[in-house]
Image (cartoon, rainbow, N blue to C red; front, side):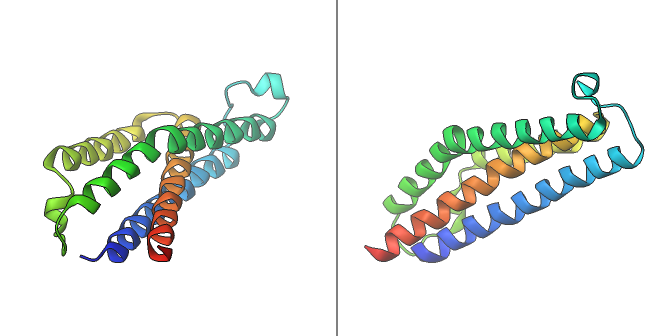
Length: 149
């Protein structure tokens, strides 16, 4: 796999997952609004919409911070490992089994979110989607930087 293909595959994968989770979170909150379920801090903001706006901003901020401080390190480690491997690289050499188990564990945790209230589930999906979107941006930026060098 070429360097450009690796960065494209990783960036597109993370971007698609981000889009899926972000839209899933928004759909949870849309359903919450349709059923007029009470939101945490609703009395403070006076309405479900006001509370939802606050939780939406908080979810976006948490997602951005996670992407900036956590996923940036993951992208940098993966890129460093990729650049040290002899080319062409097979995907099985790039991602160790521990990384694949981590992804599987995260997917399992995501499935367990079905049992959480819609307000919490929507917020978590939006936060994780935002973080993955930021990670996708990092992969595309690395690809651009390498292709211009």
